[in-house]
Image (cartoon, rainbow over all chains, first blue to last red; front, top):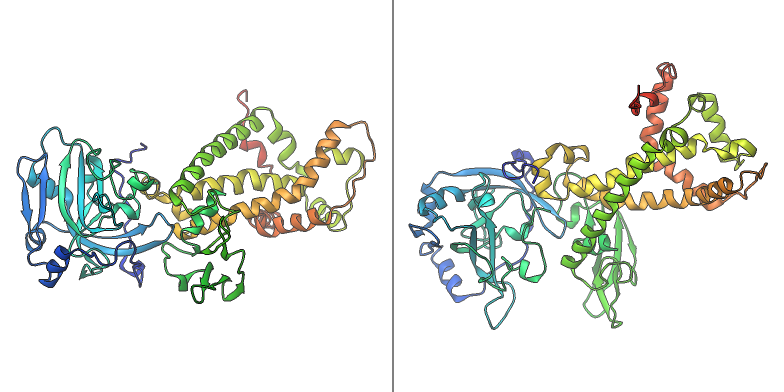
Length: 207
Length: 284
């Protein structure tokens, strides 16, 4: 679509950074597992990368910080209508996926999060998101551990969140725990590719 | 309207690239006060109005007072559902764009644009323009043959709506998309950033509404004239509402056009007629 595969989202200067970056969605995941990780300042946290990969990974924050980094000052657009500009730092998802070595059947990357935004009995209130491989390998798609030069606050998704800069805010999954490479989305949540997608929003959130 | 449903998800407008926190807003609808009896307010710049019952706080279908921007009778759907509101909005956006393109193509192909809407050279002379404005202010309506053509002010209103306001509504809408902003980064710069574009996108239909009201009376009269060309010395009754709105259009939307006009007049206008070059005929 109009060369959308390669176009970059605008990057701003440091003077454009919003003085306050609004926190939205989950402010504090309420699981005991997350509380324990937070207690240890995420020293025990590991990002699991699994699914249709030849080489499943388990990465600590230090592992992620030792990979090549990207810093980008971008505008975050919420589906509600507001925007905020922030400086994100993290590892391009492409590097992590290259390490994990995708199998030929891979089509989507699913992000499992620590927070549940709605209380349900069947677990479909758990936050998750997914992107296709075009966005997964886009150079501005990063797993961010810092906002404006400081480690992510709890409200902004500590210890790690996704940044998919050409899509709306609900795509920017916070509190990442597990990345799963898959060939279909209908087996996750209620089958539409994300928490908000399951509740009526578009899976492609570039509009 | 689906746009008001979307607005209600974050009922504040800003200027610039970013904007999220109410203290920076140019325009805001909100509510304050304790839960059982919240008060709705509408803030424009530094001035706050109590708008309980309509904006900020209004009743839901069950008659209970709810905190929300625009009331349920103005939003589509009436209850709070941003996902559904967006679907309605995009559906009508496609219809709107198709309709606009069709109209523009038809107006050019049929010669309506060149014949009826582009100002004639003699209409653009400063004296003629001043006379038009003076006649308009005195509510002196054209008679006879003169009433069978649009006068300059009418032409400028139409051109402003068709070529400035309506396209700007579509283009500001496109800039709401972060995907489109990556593909067409210059587009958002025209409007001064995403939040400016959102403010313009919100404000634009209001302007067009004003134009439509102003021109509605004239368009009706026009249609009547077209139908009854034999009636000479037609004299319509002056419309004060149309007059006020007409004035509003010129102040709001034709400012750049008028500024360009006076600049052109000051620099030796009208030696050359620009309009001829706008739509060169295939034959020549």
